[in-house]
Structure formats: structure tokens, C-alpha cells
Length: 420
Image (cartoon, rainbow, N blue to C red; front, side, top):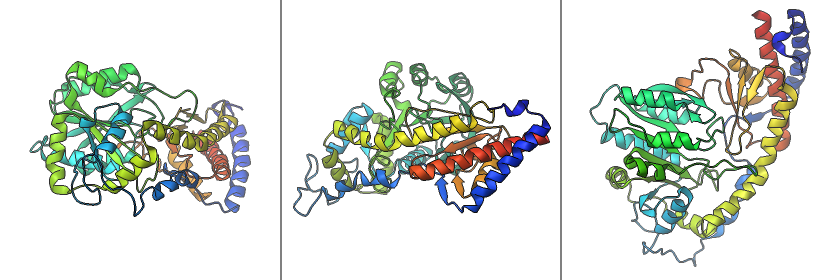
């Protein structure tokens, strides 16, 4: 495919006209396709339907540490669920707190708790936000009034030269968000060196915290999965055990609206959280915890379940990447990631055209996450990053959506170069 930037104005105009005609044909077909968020598709949701039948009226509702999970009590979760999540995160069950159905809710509560206790009375606080990143992370700290500071991402995770410099110089920086494995949206996994540098941080703020959102901890989609170094093993070596909160959930393992979330933290951090939770709730849904534990049995059962997800997701990711390769490779119109897991593919279109591409797609019946959403305050300074979520549409729908996306990306690029 010809490099767009090397085309003459006449060639670009001819190319644009061909693309415009194809685009008008797509519009006339009346599509309603959605790649806006990383939601599991219907096939994935169906994988866990049998879990709804695990508990029956004849079930034993007792656990090792709870006489009846249908009743009050058990603030930090049943021991069996703690063990399952401890095995998943490779920590001790004593360091695990099992919550409700949402890890995002636990992250929100954690920030609220730290604002009430650890950072109380402090003003003009800041939070580091690796970007492209997860818009809901940024939204939480923006809601609590933090100034959001963008940290660039590299192929090894956040630019640690930038992180180390910022936290060492500014005591008003209180934390950093990070999806350490298969980041949202780029699918990057922090290298061993990056994890070690996180663990060895020397922040000016002694109450600095790392929000380690391990959302895609077991969400591999091929035979070459990424490996992530255990952050808690590393902070024990540096004496920074209190610096990390790790989060995960079964939201994209079983049911996003009815999964189980958990966090891992040091003893001191768990005490901070308990001070809040003991007034906020008496217990979370222990029946759902028991249901999950009995359904999976142990970590191996959960990992076997994830292979079923992989069988559904791998063809979707391969289809998206194949279309991008076939339709855009060599054109200079876009670059994209090729992750080994997670839920997204990150596409960088020609700078200054991401909003245009998203708008063109919308007019043709393809809904994408808004351009800029992967940056703090929703503002991508280069207007180039677009998050692709391949999981929700059917394969047929996904193929059509990506064909339209590629046409829109080329149209926007051609138009921008013609006007340059």
C-alpha cells in the first residue's frame, strides 16, 4: 500500500474520492455496531451460566470461618474466597480483602478512605496517570479533586524515569494508577525492571500509594502470554510494603455485573480500609463468594475456565489485527499494538485525526470510545489514540466494523494531508 504522506495532492484527492464512495455505501447499509467498551460478548457470558445452579436450597451454607453465609458478618470475605484470590494474586490470604462485585468500586472506596485518613487536611494533591490509560481510573481521582499528571507509556510500562523524578521532587503527588498486565488500552505488561523500579520508589510523600489494578491478571489470548513480576515480593525487598494496593476481580471471568472483587494490601493498609468498611457495610455478598469458590474449586479450575474465554477471544483479536494489517499496513495512516492478552487493541491514527475518525465511524453506525478518553481530562494532546474493543461484537460484526474503521482512518488522513 502506498504511503499517504508521499502521495501528491492530486493522488490524495483521487484516493479520498474512492474512500468516500466506499464510506457512503457503508452508511447506506444502516449498521449498528458497538466497539465502545470492553464488555464480554454473549458467548463469554454463557460460559458461566452453570454457576447459577451451584447453590440450591439443599446446599450447605457454612464455610470454615462463617456459620451461615446467608447472614450478617464476615467483613473481609469468607476464607475460601480469600484463598482463591490469594492464589490468583500470589499473596497471603491474610493480605486479601474480598468485596462486592466491582473492583472499580473498591478502588473508589480506597481513594475515599485514603482521602479521609491518610491525606486528610492536605491540599492541592496530585495523582500520576500513565497514558494512554483507563478513563475510569482518571475519573475517580478527578472526582476527588486531584490534579491529574500525565505520564507517558513505553513498551515496558510507564516511563519510570519520569515517574521517579516526579515523585522524588513533589510531595503533593500522592499516587499513581497502573494496569500492570495488558494495560488498557495498549496491552502492555510492565517489564521486570519496571516492577522493581516501582517497588524501589522513594517518593517525597511518605503517604504515596500505587494503585496496582491487575484487571487482566489471567486474561491471556495466545500461546505466548506475558509474565508479570509479583509486586508484593519486590516491595518486601525494599521495605515499601505499605506503598501498594493491588486489585482484581472476576468481572471478565464470570459475570461483569455479578462477579467478585478483591484487593491485596499490607496489614497497615488493611487496617485503614477496615476503619471505613466497618461503618459502610456489615458484609459483602458472601453467597456470591461461595458460589464462585464452589464453581471453580481452586485456581486451576479458574485457569481452565479462562481457556474457554481464550477460545472465544483469540479469533476476534486475530481478525482485528489481520484487517488492520491488510487495510492499513504501509500506508502511514496508523500504528497499532499487538497484545498477548487483555481486552483492547490501541490504534494511533494520524495525529490530529482521532476525533474525526471516531465521528466518521459514528455516522456510519460504528460506535467507538470517544477520542481522548484514554488521557486525563479526556484530552489527547496529539489527538491520535483510539481504543478498539474486539470482545463484544460477533465475529461477523467485528469484521464489518473494522472495515469501516479502516476506511474512516484513511479518509481522515487523506483529508488532513490534502489540507496540510
